[in-house]
Image (cartoon, rainbow over all chains, first blue to last red; front, side):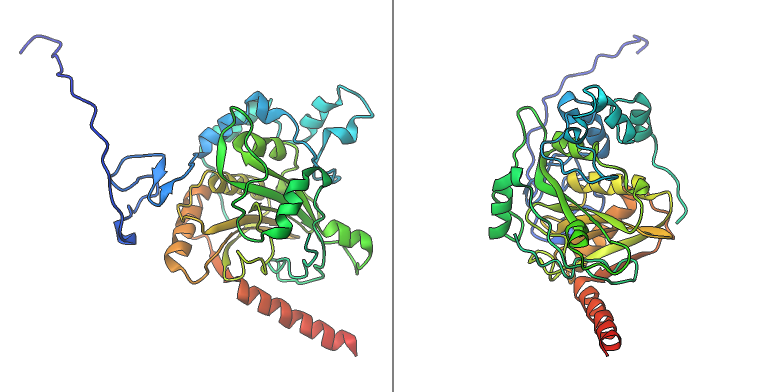
Length: 122
Length: 238
């Protein structure tokens, strides 16, 4: 009893559980849960590709997410396609990014995206 | 591509104006424009595909931008500028590529909108996917639009709404004294769906409990638009 470390017995990983949904009433009330109560990446009605906000924001910093899109139309004041500035300066692309506040390079941007949801008055 | 944009939703701010236009497809996405000619509803055939190692989305989406030209337009320029297709994406990474090269809605000037719709669904009431649908509208005081829009579209792209195929797209409308965000769904009469969307909106936008959320069917929007234009024509025409 006084032996500090109790040994825990190991258990098998629970097998797959299937939950059949026949009625909307069987759906959980919380959106973050699935029938059966565990968070799965699949939902009734078939597998759906679900991402939460944090995951999506994390993807923003990946190198592929930072290359400019192909064929971005140049809408002054709205979009900033790199081709529109290509004749100015090759280093301008970095500037272009910085002028748009959606820059993904800035660490501050990232933390801003991560912080708790804001309070607001409407 | 279909050029009939005459009832592009624009009722949010309460004023209705000329909306005829074309979102001329970009030549470089040719498969996409062909696609749009053929299919109005949620395109099953994917035109953009996720790149290697990218995170696919449940659906492909298209960004649109529209802006009301001040004054009485009808010039080909305003026609051209009213709505533009910015581009389509199929993965999380492709989304960020567009988003990071677009201004935030809160920094837009004038009477303008960003639309993010599933690929193949046009941001207009008459689209097959929208015609029996409606939208939740939330009016925001100035300064909140960028943040709310980002949270809204991330929830949509990440399939947080849990309403199957019901979501059509989202819109942020920058207006003079307020901004409006809305999310469109297919079946206005499906109350289980619309309430689920409302509850998810509250959650993902972290809305205070007293926030006013309004559901509006597109049928009502069209009616209001027609009434308004009927009045304009009747008084202006004679």
